[in-house]
Image 1: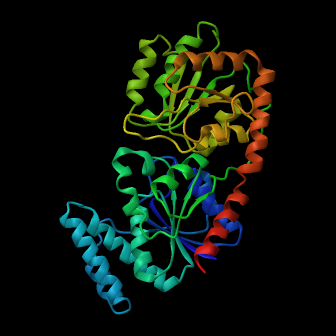
Image 2 (image 1 turned 30 degrees about the vertical axis):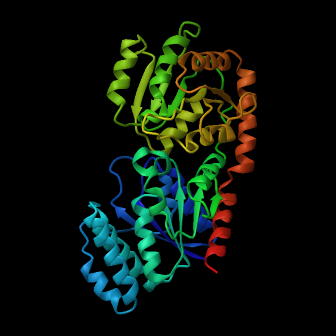
Length: 397
């Protein structure tokens, strides 16, 4: 099997699941090609990127469509004319990126004809999916797309979802919640659940559940992660837990507001914002954490998480977790069995759950151990990789 991945930006620090997926597929004997629409992010980079043998090709941002259209027109004249007309129609309707997507799609199509992958695959049902779909329509090679969260639920994307996934051979997604939602949104589409694979890490046997270890939160600092609720919960929990400290790893547009909120609530000395870290830094944070807290919410724009990878990573290391009962999270965090769940936007309930876990380290570790067993069974990278390969074998027939 040979697969050509089309990604918006590769690699990205927040998309460890993509890197793991590529490495797993290569381990399973798949030849992987990567086309990225944008250059890699500046800043720290996960060491796992070096485990991927595929060398990404970066498409020029200001690519013109005329040259590749002329070259491809010799081999696929009707398909190229249809795509040019489609892009002109979208551009006339106000889509400013239509011609750039056309140019990128035609460049990908040229690579498809030259290197002959069995299937195209894109992550996120936005620009990368649209570019891959152009290449698929021109070449006839099937395309599949993994849909995650913002690309499905955000108000800016909801109405465009059907058009972006038109003609896609199958839509992959990461939670049963998403499968149900996409099944209603895209009647007749082939929807397949493939969870983000996460390998088991070294178990946290020393600090899990202990009061002298910090609570950990790893995420982008955006509204749907609910870090403001967590900061408020820390202020409430500190009354009963004088040792309580919170480490926040990640960055984003809300960082200044959250720092100010912690100071305003009198817990600025208890909450440390570390910024973005590579996988080694995050791994060290898991090893010293008492528990991981991530109070996700559905934000005012409809954006939400499909199933946060950080919760899977924490449980893969036996670290107990506290989260909210939204979207696909209860599929992993089963209240009282593999973690604790509280309602979204409820800092008091979150504070109680944090204090309860840190007051009973034996029970906290039992939840972490049960969660680790669930991750080993349902989130094994090899299992996810083989499920993808099985799907691609179906659509490539």
